[in-house]
Every structure is written in structure tokens, then in C-alpha cells.
Amino acid sequence: MSSDVATAMRETSNDFLAAFATWKTDPIMALRAPECIHDMLPASLKRSSKNNEQFRSYFTGVERAMNDVKMEMHDYFASVEDRRAWFHTTLTATSVDGEPYDNEYMFVLTFDEEGRKVTRVLEMLDSVKTQAIYARLAKAREKA
Image (cartoon, rainbow, N blue to C red; front, side, top):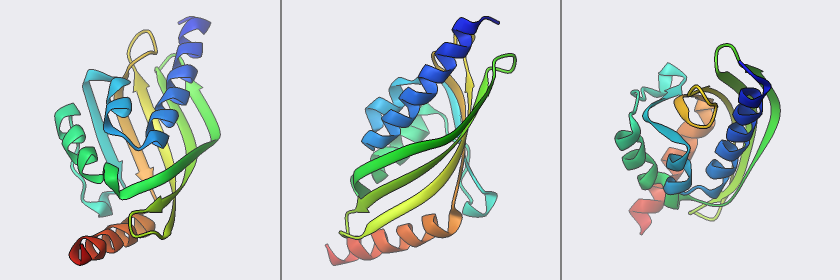
């Protein structure tokens, strides 16, 4: 595979992170191939694999939960031969309850032949922080 694919994969990875930083469903979905599958780990979170329709439904439900989202990529590694990229990121935001929120992620993206669309997302996140924010958001919904 060519260096053009490597460049495309890096650009798509950067675009993926920028889309997540919008915390809006449509920009995130725009980078996904029609057959894309999203897996959220660790398994202790008990999140099933999601196709595009399922992920859109899920993320539409959580997109109102965060404001002022910032994501930063710390490490990036890619295998052009496997059409995969791995990157470590951190997120900071303000949740709808007005409190600060941060989390840490490791994404593994698999790309189409051109490196422009994501065919699989493997998202590993800090499960303790994720469970804590879900509990906080549930309390905020009860008060509303």
C-alpha cells in the first residue's frame, strides 16, 4: 500500500478525533463506512457491538450530556498493511450537571482500502470514570 493510504489514514484519524470533539452525532457518523461496527470496551461495561444505526441511536442519546468538549491525541501508531491505526486520547468537558468531566481513551480504527472511511471502531475507555458519569447524568435527569 502506498504512502497516500498512510496519509489518508492519519488524516481520517485526526478527523475522527475532531468529530468526537464536536460531541455531535452527524460529524462522527460522516467518517464511518456503511458496514462500520463500533465496540466499546472493557467488557465489564457490558456494551454490545453497534452497527451504524445502533451507534447513531446510542450517541444521539448522549450527545446532550457534554459541553465544551476537548480531545487531545497523545500517541499514534498505524499499520498501513493492516489498514489500522491506534491512538491514545484524553477528553475534558463540562457535563450537563455543570461539573467538569475527563476521561481517557484508546481507539483502534480499521479503514477501507483508501483509508478514508472507518470500517471498525474499537474504543477502550476508563470504565470507572464512565460508570461515574452515567450515575451523575442519571441523577441530573431525575432532578430535571
